[in-house]
Length: 164
Image (cartoon, rainbow, N blue to C red):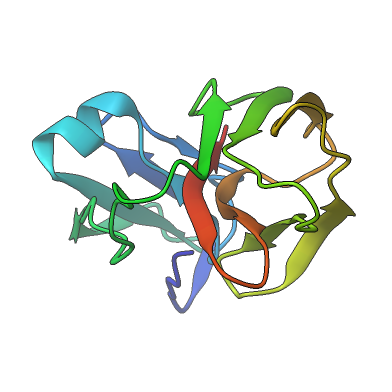
């Protein structure tokens, strides 16, 4: 989420030199979702242009370099067969997920949280042969970064999910 400001302006416009998207280029606090090229480069330049109030006809631009750190701080679990697979990622309107390595008699809870840590989706998984897969309609969620977590009492797996 970005936070820009300007005084004595009639309008503003955000622009990127990358391939990501803004949820609204004409507000001070849009959400910018980096694209594949932004992520591959590890950074993107964003520009905010403010257009003067009438009778003035000038514009003023400022820019900021956003560094994209792909590390989520969540280690890759290699010791346990308990796993969560998410396809596609980034996703647009549907998200396919599969949880594998589920032991019998261990309840698994699937939760999705937004970047503010607010749970936006939760469900208890019905287990069939040690795994569960399904398709989730994500069209009602705002674009941004989310975390999908499958957990039982002993272990958990988390995948970062980008909704575009």
